[in-house]
Length: 127
Image (spheres, rainbow, N blue to C red):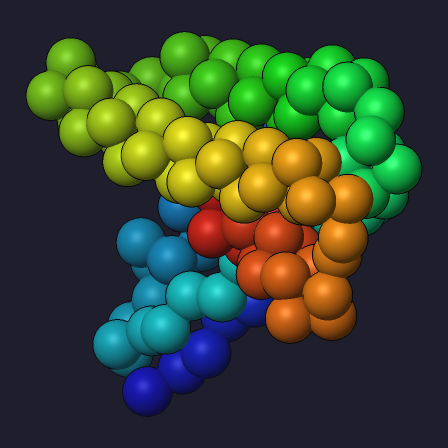
């Protein structure tokens, strides 16, 4: 078995995702694929967390940018209609979870280390 890891800049574009897919498809052994968050996503998640903790509604603008980037990536991938529909449904589910957690941070103006770690983990989950 082979483990292949792709960093955020490697998969941060449609072309990068296509290249990663080609590498995985050409593997001669079973592979486990590990991906990082898209470039700058972790920093933006930390920024949104900090803004929410401070009670600033501008965390929603940062979150909107994260959402848009990921949705645009899906739209620009050459997928069949069923594949795109399935991927968008899963992505929307994850984005809704993230939105709810950040809203909770905003409402209580508190961010524990555990919650921060959870929020940052969405970078990889969304990828």
